[in-house]
Length: 410
Image (cartoon, rainbow, N blue to C red; front, side, top):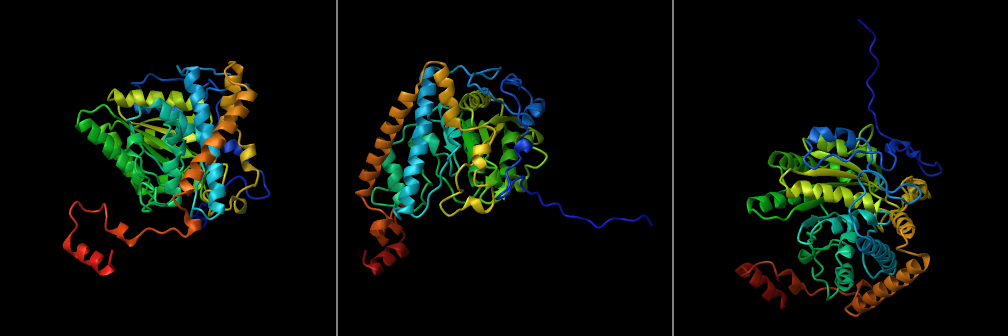
């Protein structure tokens, strides 16, 4: 009988740990302008090479090169810069507010601002986004008033959700921003179902689903891909690969020796893999996918390669599981700095305007925060009345709930 070695279980390991600089060669980078741009009506199987490469527009000198250079105005790019800057400033101020115990919890999108902002500008406002908890840049790009967002974070009397959602889990129908769920991956099947309903109604609106690399390991992700493929649902399936799901490296969710974009091709869905820190590339890929959906050509899965520069949440300490300076070594750089360089090359931005815009947006966020705090925060020991449990649930309150409310004397 031939000798057989004992079986071994493979457990993926990151290429960098605290005290050891990360080797980012696993990212499969392509040069700016190198990846082809297929026709919108391409068959999914013919996007396989793109699913294993990386669409980039901005080169190292801040120039836009290659077939994916989008048709986008300088005014839109300037608005995108403001949206990204406002997102980062908002995140920074709300992080401080959480440390001051004015809210229980917060999640930044530091380093990922281009993905939500650019796609929001590529879509129509009445297209429905089904986000996860790091796409606040969509709200900034769609100029949602900050006051209501901060009230939701502080669960105060101005909270439109009346304290019934965790902070950062916004729900803003008029901005095409579907209710965020703390149960990971549920938004993926919701988005596909919404897109199918839009087609059934002969509507023209499309859906945009968002998920992180870690949550692609959930069964809902695969179910959503099956329905999207079978019914040609008009949906963009966004996978934000920011390299870390809490303390778990992206390879644990299936990113080792392959890409998340490749899962789309395997399911019969056109797939793109895109530099998520390149505002122009994000806008171009989103426009391509949106055109495909609107022309009944089916869904597109887009893997956005980016980096979570901050902690997963205010409950996380990333220095325990990755190098402290990891973000500064990420080869795709910072999305704000890269767009800034491009705009300055075009003569459409300057250091002085950047500084002035920073001060203007900081003042805007501070003013909104002060206004929101007049309605209370957790630091004031604010709690909602128990009566809130009974309201806005049923059109006509059932008798047993009416009796319970009476027993509470509210």
